[in-house]
Amino acid sequence: MLKVRRTLVRRTKKFQEGTYLIKVSWRKGVWRKIELAAHHTLEDLHQAIQQVFDFDDDHLYSFFMDNKKWSHASYSSPLDESGPHADQVTLGELALEPGQSFLYLFDYGDEWEFKLKVEGIDPAKPLPLKPRLVAERGAAPEQYPDNEDWDE
Image (cartoon, rainbow, N blue to C red):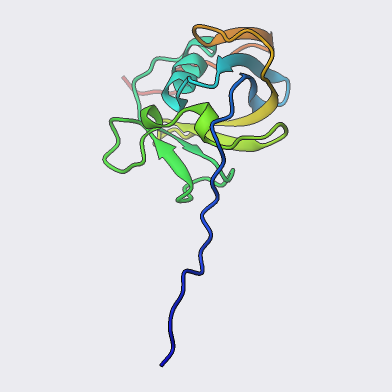
């Protein structure tokens, strides 16, 4: 008789304290750098991205941790029917590493795609109470640009 043993090893890491520096890029030459604490959630990161790019938070979103759009390695908006949800996981729980990239997709219709990169994790730096913008380059895109060809 063949016995099946546990063949999948679950990757577990302890909570990683520190101040996280995340670079959020829209297109070449348009980016923002945001500092967050390990206790901030992906929902907090979503809110920070919305603020620094001057977007209206009026659509669903997902973070794709394997950097592949529509993969199952994702955390979605708390309003999305599918989970897991972005407000239920902190940065410190994600086992992120400096240099790691992942994808943020906002508005499933228009598909605003932002590339995120962990630029650093500093355990000695004072933790920010809330996410904060520390650097930026380029003009933010217009979420709802005027379209002269639009029929009224």
